[in-house]
Image (cartoon, rainbow, N blue to C red; front, side, top):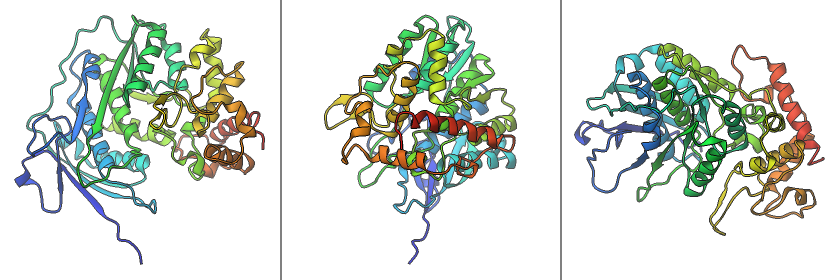
Amino acid sequence: MRTPKRTWRFHFGGHPSRVPEGWVRLDAPLDNELLHDGPPQVGLTLAGLREAIGRQPPARVEDLFTIAVAVYTADRRAPRRRDGKPRRFELNIPVSEPDTWNRPQSRALLCALLGGLSGDEWTVQFRQDVNPPPWQSQLLPAEVEAVALFSGGLDSFCHAGLLRPASKVVLVSHGLGPNLRERKRELRAALGGETVMSAEFQVRINAVPGTEREPHPRTRALLLLAAGVLVCAANGVDTLHCPENGLLALHPAKAPLWSQSATPIPPMTVHLANALLDSLDVDTRVVNPYAELTKGEVCERAVDAGWRRSLLGRTITCVNPDKKSSGRFGNCGYCRHCLVRHAALVRVGGDLTEYRDVYPPEIPLMAPGPHDKDLRALRAWLGGELTAEQLAPLPPEADAARALAVVERARLELADIYRV
């Protein structure tokens, strides 16, 4: 018997008496006023992001960040079905310019963007926000020339290093734990404390007794994009850099090995994000400078620019860098992302990463056990045929043959280490 698809209806903010029957009221995305007993449903840490606001951003750009927080909250509040089938969402969100967001083109592009990120069905309604949150402008010490997303991983660190000649670079990141935040601070300091500014923020979905949370919210990418666009628009910067190597960006959608990659921003997401910004008359453009490079090719650029391999080894690529059972932090050495990382660093002369659990050279000799799952999946993927149809959906203007060539080069890079 088929299980009927549930519709998750979330109404953000507003007095409880005005929430329609059958809808769940959640706190307004950026509102500290609570109309319920108990702790806040969403914990926000926005000080770092606010410090990067050079001047008052357009209201519709502020709205985009509000929407991103609401969408991420809904994603986390609605656990995925065990059968993996799409969820259905209906959201009611307060914004400063509801007429802009309720335009058919803008709303359709937003829902397409959300569906592409999460694989779910989204319907969004907008109403007037009677108390929009202020984004007070700051007097920045130098004019911002570049804005980029920064995860603390190899791709984002390498690109930040190449942007460093700019007089002021703002790195936008979403904090996911004290250990990772501290490592990102270390890496930013290595990039140059005087010219590199952090715009770090955090959105925490607090536990509610009797409910579950979705552990793998794919809409986190929208949070990062919206925060990056906010910083760009507030500083007159026309490009948001989202560095992500081609294998991750083009992750083969039908390959289980890559289907759960953390917060990917594939080409179709970039395309839809730019189309949405166009419809909103926002000048910022989202670009992935590494869309046609393998991870090894990204590392080559960094080494050629003079970055030490030991510093590259301090970046964090791991799917789960915080191991609660041991209390240790770092790259595990055996997950799919660590395997790709190791092959990339070997390509530029050797991997100097101190791995937490398993050092990759030992992996090819590993006996079957708890650490070999991703290695076996990787070898199976390398041994199979690859076609353009298996890649993540591509935008109309994309060259499928070029995209396929990037992934093929990445496969050769991996096969050199993990031979099948």
